[in-house]
Length: 205
Image 1: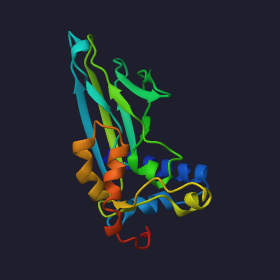
Image 2: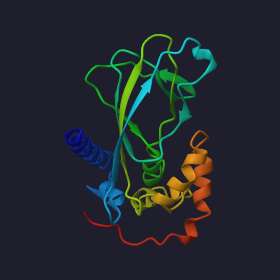
Image 3: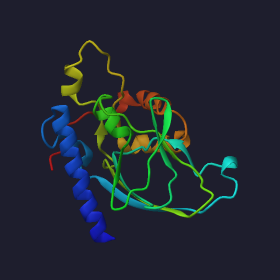
Image 4: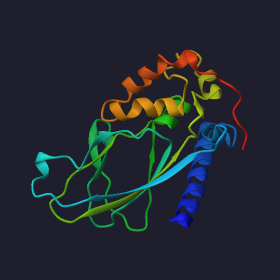
């Protein structure tokens, strides 16, 4: 598991560099924002969804967006259940052997000023088969200051800044109670704390 985590962290950081390239940001910008002064946080969660005889009565996992940065998911290669919301329609994410599903969390939506959106997703209960998943989360450090990249805001000067500035650990204090609601109330809650956040220089790696 230690080696697994090392390799997935490398992959997550490569993906951050690809996002920087796509957005026209300085190479390494997203990684620097995630680091704060203590480095990013990384964790892995293993989930087990047993078969349910009456899946219409329960939800395997309610719809939500993830709080953090990049999520790398090894999902079951036989039993389905994961869905994502696209254009107001729930889309199945079919099992695919030897693949990693990449999901983006709320912090990347804020930093990219909405160019990339955190993905609403859910897991449906299934009547047949036990579904296993291994999700790894590459998140900002606790003291990382999250805010829209100035370069992305400057290019859209006619548009108001829709996202707040906050410390990641403060967002995580708000997230648990609002996890299964729309993400906008979470962003609004952080705006009330915005004046207390000191925007220092981005830590270098």
